[in-house]
Image 1 (cartoon, rainbow, N blue to C red):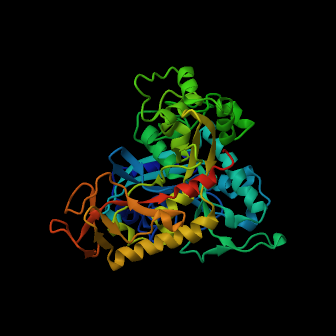
Image 2 (image 1 turned 90 degrees about the vertical axis):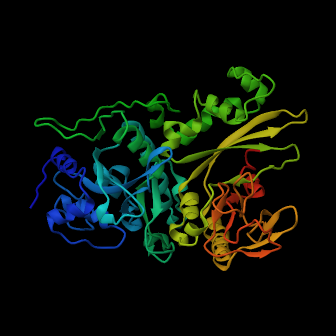
Image 3 (image 1 turned 90 degrees about the horizontal axis):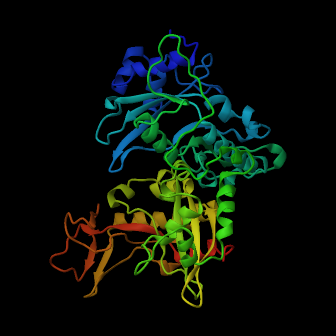
Length: 496
């Protein structure tokens, strides 16, 4: 029986697993696995002699360390977290009277021994390899933001409104869905006479995990709060009040003791409201030449917050998975373009279920940062303001869900394609249907040719009318979901 008294002992045991296939971790301990989705997590726990459990505290109580395995995937941009790191389930009844320091999140997850394993789609989970082990606790700056996130979650629980929780509500710490389906419900405090709410768990967002693994676990940066190498005898896991980063919005972390990160960002941009793009460009030394750079509005947003680089790539925005969206409102009060999301693959989309779908997870977990510019009579644009926004559950779980389901059905039944002589029309939901989101091409050039870079293969042959001879039955232009421009406009009315 393994017995761990210290965090250093736990981490050194974790380092011994590096390079081993996951199946070997279980074999070494001769323990049984349970569940279908958590085999790797069970295997990681078994490596430390822990059987699957539902205890309220950390897995290794004497050492005060919780054990978590998390998948890593290789992308064009480098190693990325495959998913959020799901922590403990939120018991709305018990959490009702907690403070952050006594919360189930802090009690269970203050120290984590993370096993990063390489996820490969075509491999059996037992063949996945442990790539790195990391003993982790939260850097001071992150912790201030996470405390604020916890308070936002807790406020809804205290108000009996846990049904209104979403990951987009917060920055780094999320409250993610955790259950088999929408019928996985939990009671709220009986004093409030509130309805049951969807079961959720605390989680660290995928953007936060990707930042962590790229910068510290697999990158060259060091932080006392994140240890990947084994401890020598007599060495201790000590943390200091220090945090180094490439580029951050918040330079002085003491401000986060007084106001939230969101409010700090909005306060910092407030003095620039009402100024024209020309005035801001002069203020930040951005040259116009014949015309401004194509991304001038995004550049101005970064400079307003004291950044030289891309705001989207700042430390806080990466960790919180915040997507920056600059919006230009025309003189007539309308937005010209709808807002696109990444293109989907037809075959992958039809094999998803709504609860775990890419679209649902993206809209529930993501927070958007709208930076709004409005056209004036003379044709110039002024900065009107900014806001953080996440999609309300009442929209996501009704209209958006129904559009997603109808899109899946359309693909499964065979997309209807009609060649008009100039272009190809399809029967996906359109922006004119006024249903919050719609489907249309993501590629700038249409293609219905096999293996074309702008096309994707359909799982079921399309139902063609007037098909040109050179076009395929099984390939069509890549598509993606778009937020309707009129819906986006409604969300920024308070700014305008």
